[in-house]
Image 1: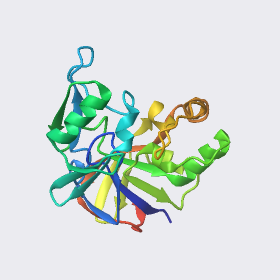
Image 2: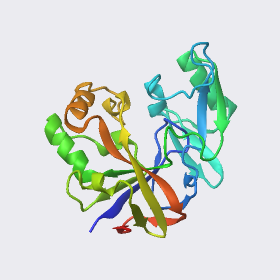
Image 3: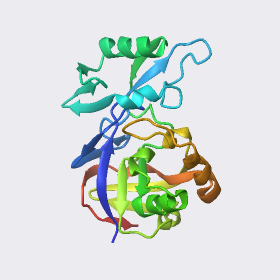
Image 4: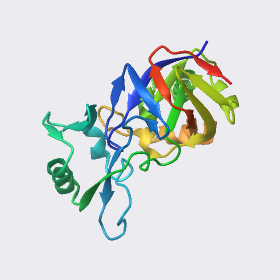
Amino acid sequence: MASVVEIWRYPVKSMAGERLDSCAVTATGLEGDRRWALVDGTPNRAGKFLSIREEELLMTYRARLDGGTVEVVSPDGETYRMGERVVSRIAAETSRPLTLRELEGANFDDSPVLVVNLATVSAFGLRSGMLVDHRRFRANLYVDGLESDEEVAWLGRRLKVGEAELEAVKRCGRCVVITHDPDTTVTTPRLLRVLTETYDTYMGLYCQVTRPGQVVEGDHLQLG
């Protein structure tokens, strides 16, 4: 039986996230997920989110929620409360004018919950000829106990996970972000090429929340 083996939240878009034992899933996704985002002010990108695609440096900052406050740990180990100091630091490091946007449920690229099947990641690693760290795919819920690619058949179906219920609405198309090692940011460009050749660039399922509730690591996943 499929079960949730890891739960991840990314309080600040494109920064490294935090692994959780449990999390409330609200109508807009995991509580606090991508609630904050950096907005680029450079002339050719004004108003667009700053992401790993533009600045891999963001991956070296780690965000976590402490109560209602976001703490950000910099690459050199300094801890900040998310606000002007850390925004100014990243702006200086990237030579970009940046502002901070805080808006629950509005900073996603697509749907609010991303589910990835670890068996599919393992199969992709075999095709790539290397061990692929599943964290490259920045999912909220990693599930195990399935066959590779079994999750594709979930499209259009309801998924009961703990107290929450999700609807799988589309496959997640990938970009160069998966080529970056989540710890070192070192790139392996062939990963995107192999994913394109073998999975049409897809990995994981985007889901909408149809019933909020608590999800706990180890919860079984049942199809509705």
